Amino acid sequence: MKIFTCAQGSPEWHAARAGVITASMFETARAKLKTGPNKGLPTSAAADYAFRLAVERISGEPLDNGYETWQMQRGHELEPEARMEHEIQTGLVVQRAGFVATDDGMFGCSADGLIGSDSGAEYKCFIAPEKLRSIHIDGDASDIFAQVQGCMWITGRRSWHIGLYCPALRPAGKQLWWREFQRDDNYIESLEADMWAFKLLVDEYEDALRNKAA
Image 1 (cartoon, helix red, strand yellow):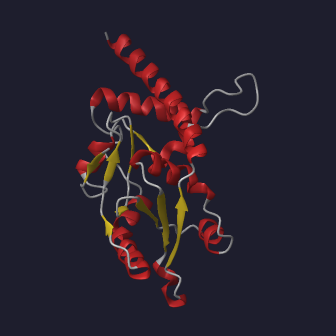
Image 2 (cartoon, helix red, strand yellow):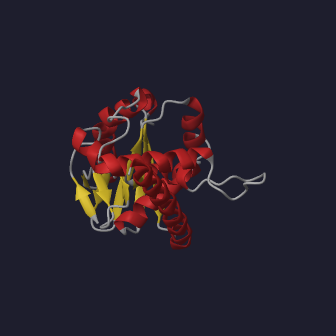
Image 3 (cartoon, one colour):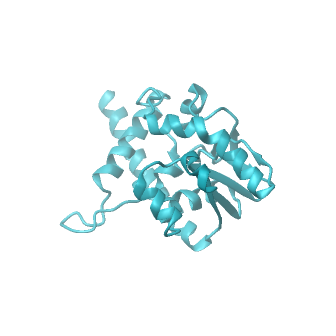
């Protein structure tokens, strides 16, 4: 794997991600239509994502010029606090990673931290009540399962820590909810197959764009 130590949200980070199928989008990329005559084909969201990546492969730059929503900016700003809180609560040393890609550069993940030689960390800074309730009350982190397992696939690690950081809950001592997830090789095998199939769709769009341009 290749590790880019640039700060998340920086121009270097956006450049490293351009044209790369990232773990945060794995769930979107593998989504298929469930009904109708086109059942089993990629959803429009998956197709749009594949097309965006094809354009980025050609340009070598992010299609959105690195635009970030305020939620993304907030997450990047709070990440150092979340990492520090995680280290305090666990006694672990979390090494900042920035962006990690497979050797071929086809797949990547914005790993918020690497722990020792066999684990890693991802921090979420949700403020949406439904997401906070789902995790804090129900203990349900299924929404980010594909991303977590994808990080382990890309880095080859055996476990991954997920931290939900919400400073507003500090008065209750619940500013950081965290759990350690173990690698699920069966799930990763299925995920990898889906991602390689999605990569072919990106290839298809790239070839179509280059041929039309010619």
